[in-house]
Length: 111
Image 1: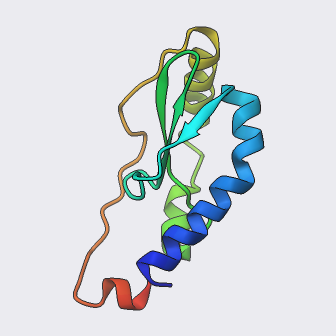
Image 2: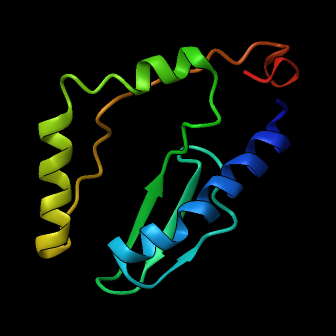
Image 3: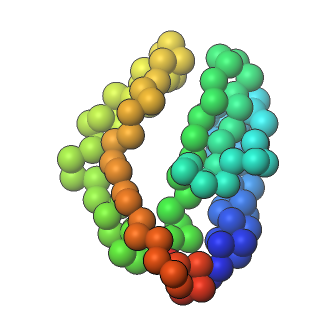
């Protein structure tokens, strides 16, 4: 899948998840300019926050295997969500880091 196709697929996933995101965060606006690192962003009205969203369901299997490993991160994620719900606080530190090897045929291969 080329880069434009991947972004389009990510936007479809974001639209499908919008009602759930609205239930969780309240009113928000999707930033149409945010398309990579993270894949999307929403601007939450109350409390006024910007939330980055990494959409992994359209990524290839190698990426998914790494990102879906939750053995060491469940407690951290749960605490981050509880903190945000309680007082709107959040961390800007990434829980995981993934470097992508951007070689000459990166977009062509759809990786």
